[in-house]
Image 1 (spheres, rainbow over the protein chains, first blue to last red):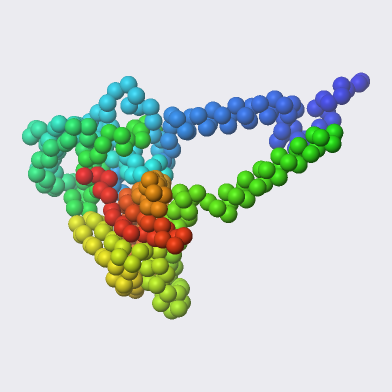
Image 2: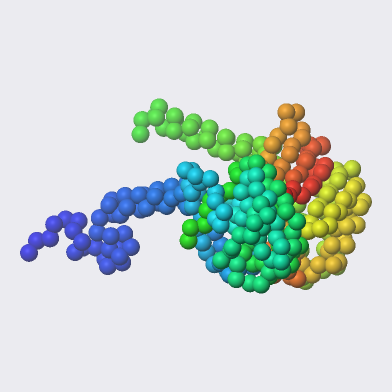
Length: 173
Length: 165
C-alpha cells in the first residue's frame, strides 16, 4: 500500500506529539492562542498574587486571584467590591474592599462600620474587631477602602481614600 | 542575489546596527534615569553575610547618588523623618545598615517626567523593601526629583507619597 508524501506515517512520534501532523496548522493555533492570551491579560484580566494578611479570611497569603479590568466600564464601584489599587503602575497593587463611596462619611465604633452615622453589616468580616475611628468625609471622586482582616490594630492596617483612576480592576476570582 | 540587492541589504543591516549601537551607548535621559535609580536600589540592598569593608562603603556609595544638598522625607506609618545633606544621609544609611540584618530593595513602575530644560526630572515609582524581621514586604510610592550634574543624574529630593489618604 502506498503512503502519500508528507503523511504522518513517516513522522517520528515526538514530532507528532510536539509539533503535530500539520506544522502550519500548529503554528496558526499557537499564534491565535498567544494573541488571545495577550489581549485577555493586557486588556481584560489581571492575575495577581496575594501577599500579606490584610484581606484575611477572604484572600489568603500566596493565593492567586484575577482582577477584571473592565468591571467599571459600565457602572461605578460599589460598596463591598474588592478592588486592585495601583501605586504608580500595575506591577505592585493594593487589594482592598470599598466601604465608603464619594460624599459619604466613614467611621468605626466598637469595631462596627458606620456609614453616614448608620451601622452597616459586613458579613465578610469574620475576625473580632474593636476599631474606633471618628467619621471621615470621603471626597468627591474618591473611594474609602479597608481590608477584611480587622483583627489587626487600626494603626497598622493600611486604609484610606483614593482617586477613582487608581483602580486597576475588580476581584472576580 | 543581484549585486544591487545585496548592497541594499548590507546598507540596511549596517544602518540597523548603527541605530542599535547609538541607542545602546547614548541612552535617552529617561533610560539613564531609570538605570541610575535601579543602581540605587541595588546599592541600597545588602545580604546578611557581607564583609566589614562592604559595610563601611555602604553609606559612601549610597550618598554618591544624592546631590550635596539633597533632602529625603519619609512618612512611614506614624513617623515622619526628614534628612538633609549628603553627610546626614550617609550617617543614616550606615545606621540603617547596622540595625537591619539584610535589606532587599526593588523599584517598580517608573513614571519619568523630564523637565523642559532636560536637566531636571521628576520620577514616581513603587518601592518594595524586604527585611528579615518583617514577613511581608513594605511598599511605598516614592517621588524623586533629580538634576543632571556633570553628566550624572543626582537625586535632589525624595519623598513618600500617600496612596491612600
